[in-house]
Image (cartoon, rainbow, N blue to C red):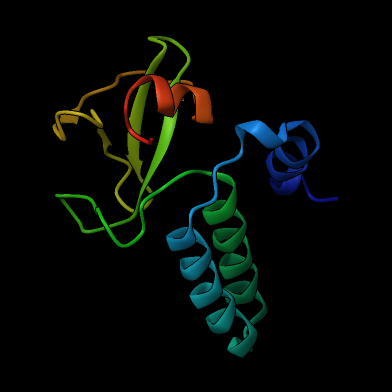
Length: 127
């Protein structure tokens, strides 16, 4: 197994069902990505689309409700392990945002992992 797939292997093997959040919008977004993926003929692009599809189901985001204010990229919810704060991270430009204030946050160093359902409930991001 290639090294770059290790994160997904670890996440899939260690995630608890109660930590996983998949909304209808996330399923619709994943379905759209899947349709693009099956039409792709270039192997490199196919793999990139596959990894994006996996990421979109394993990390909570609001695909049709919000986007990065800098580049319009997708925002995914993470927990910064240094500050124990929930943050939103842009998949395209790498900017992090405070999810409640919607302001860019500068991190010189971050150790982020996907936010759990409990963390998102606690911060009032989901109901």
